[in-house]
Image (cartoon, rainbow, N blue to C red; front, side):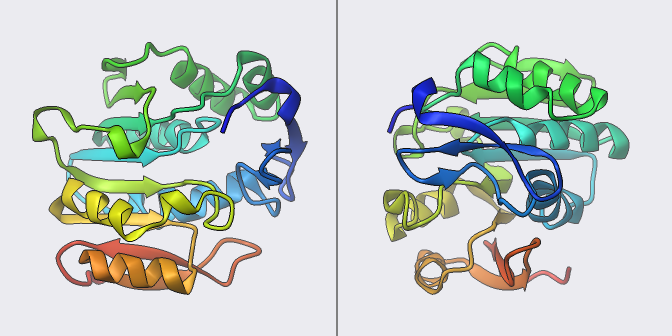
Length: 229
């Protein structure tokens, strides 16, 4: 897969926030019902906001436009949580596309997105007192967590299983399970039966919760049994 600009175009989604359409995959980077609404529901409200304490390690699989990271940056400041955020993106979007995406957001979110995408690759960037950000130009399959770092929360935001099936296999979820701390969890927009079966076989305890607009359900995966949420 590549991210040639000729294959991509910025679109407006149902809540008036922008996303990117990939013509080769015939797939959008976010829900057509609302990019911002989906990211807030799946990754913030059903991910980051479920954690208590003042420190958290987050792994994002699929940085894309940077929306999930930018929202987490803002939320870390609001909640005063020291957040170490690592994102994997083997096919980064070109700056011309990103600039068009930025223009679809308000000043605060645009600024957060720019901070994310102005960050250097491959080493930590201390974006704020509360937020350290590292992005790696690599696939999950070849990612090696430095110093055996474990994560409290994984944002799993790969393209849909019918578009990127290699990202939803048992082997992928086995690796993600290993990367989690004992009390950690994974959140994803996907609720496909085979995906949930793969997660269970990898060791996750799963919970189906209400999905964002346009989706009946989404999935949470817990490493050490089901937490009350």
